[in-house]
Figure 1 (cartoon, rainbow over the protein chains, first blue to last red):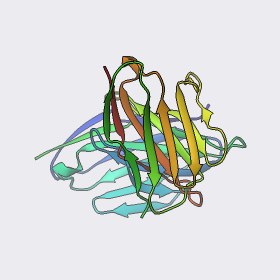
Figure 2: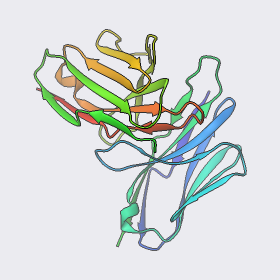
Figure 3: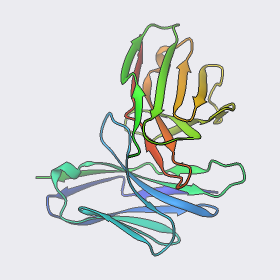
Length: 112
Length: 115
């Protein structure tokens, strides 16, 4: 069964304390793995797409990596403004078209 | 690029009335758009997939006669909540998928409150 699991559910970091968020997935024929950031009361903001194992993407303090079973979102020297919920989603291959699965997210709080 | 707008951003309506929410992709064409619902502190729940020029595909448990979806052009999809009840109060979010990359870009969401 296709599924996406994110861990931890919540993470509190001191400003400057680097860490990683995990997204484990099981999907038939991965077409893409996506990371989003969501602030309270807003729609998710697109961060990265990873299409195949071994690929990496970087944006400011964030770096996303991908293996055949999981993806990590590494946060280096986080700042309070990085506080948000980070969502992972995967697009699988299906003859019916839409197989897009979201994880439940990791709520990140960065303390000044 | 890849901006999706939603209108209205919030709406309050009385029980029994209908509410229409618009979702527009502003700088790209989207054959496929999606409608999600999100409850507080929970993840996104896919309600339906909207395809330009054809009928929407609804997820299990979502009443198609209550949540009417129209995707009349490559940049616009609408969700109409008919005969709204207080339990329909929620945060509704749309997304538009860029066909070449499968990336979904989300709108800012619409907060619906039914009194």
